Image 1: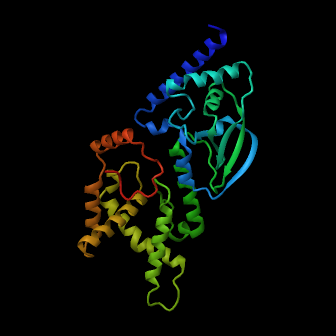
Image 2: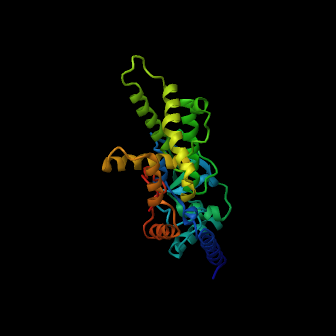
Image 3: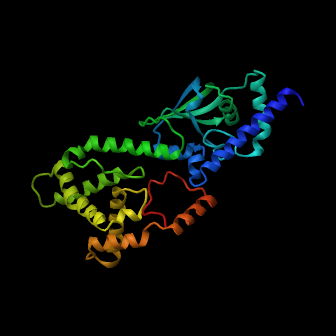
Length: 313
């Protein structure tokens, strides 16, 4: 066995073992060790245009995902399966012998890169500590800039933070209500709240000669819709039954649930009763957590579920 062959076998074994160790360290949260899928990110960020950039030298550390091979590598681009060995070792041998390989092809979105072609080359480069790589770049346009990303959850958190900043800036919600903790655990819900406020404004305008201002609508919605429901949620300690969720999440879910049961059983159902019934039906349990984990292992569930109606059951 020559030196190069021995070295590539050793390199692959070390890289593969690192993937196994990374998976073991995230055994209770396997999504955190997965390489990010470009399709998931596109669903979250909804890029508005595509532009061909051309050849660039890009930093390896900003390559965080893949278009099609996200199941073959972990979130650090270490190879997860031994079926990748032959191709991986050929690329590694070329690196050892300083043989130039074609540039990789990537999509750029929000300052991050996702591999279209060249996943093995990226994996080898990351394993060998290479800092930069030649790439042919196509840019997907998005207003949101992302940084320090390790997994989809990091992207979701940064998108929510961006949406909160936009919502508070464009509506002056915090200045009007002096309430700065309208928070959510999933993207897209500030738009839901904004539509609730617009609906509330519409009904306020009924039979009025002068148009209700947006400021008046926000203040009225907060005092007469949001805060009374949140007060009931707090009084019944409902949030305790939904770990890792927020009061804002519960507001959105319970309002929708309340509308559903009023359509079925009539409009005379008190808000108190809706909150209690919702908690009883959807509260967190260890059995439900185990069931959800098994379901995710059988069928990979997208982390981009912006349109979830209620908590998982």
